[in-house]
Structures are given as C-alpha cells and as structure tokens.
Image (cartoon, rainbow, N blue to C red; front, side, top):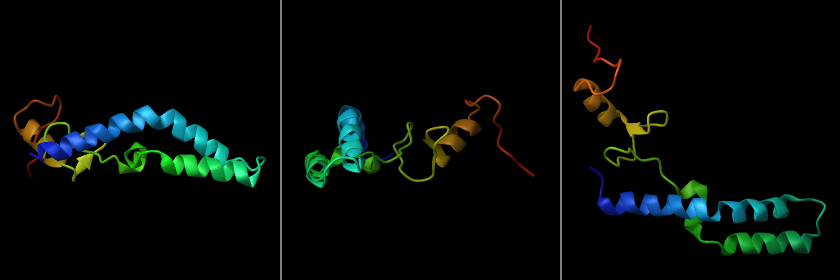
Length: 101
C-alpha cells in the first residue's frame, strides 16, 4: 500500500488539473496564435506560467485504484499488475484465470 500522503497529493493534483483546464487551454491557444502580436502572446505565456504548477496535467501520476501503487500500472484497468493478479487469483475478475503450463 502506498503512503496515504502520496495518494492524497495525486488526488489534489487531479482536482487542480480539472479546475484550471479551461483557463490553461485558452491561454495556450492565445500563445500559439500566430496572428496575434508578440506582446499579446508573451502576456499569455506569463499568465500561463503564473498558474499553479499542480494544474499542469503532466504532474498527475497514474496510480492503482486498489493500492495506490505508481508503478506497473495498466491504464485500461486502472490498477497495478500486483493488484490485478491478486484479484484474479481470488476469482473476483470475471473471465480471468491464472495461467499455468
């Protein structure tokens, strides 16, 4: 099980990303617009840099929903390989059986 603080930090970052998503996208569009003057684009970049760092989507870490583990994460299932194997061994995932040969 991951540290509670790490899991909560990641949840907080996800909330921040959702809160500032529209503002970030608008500022990025202004900064990339070639028809605007350089001064307007520069001001948009400064406003973008003034936003909280945790509002950037790249700071969000994929974590297992069951254990909070950051590594060995399957995006499709939103859980780690260890949690997946544990649930499959207990028969809690329909259609999945532990392989043996």
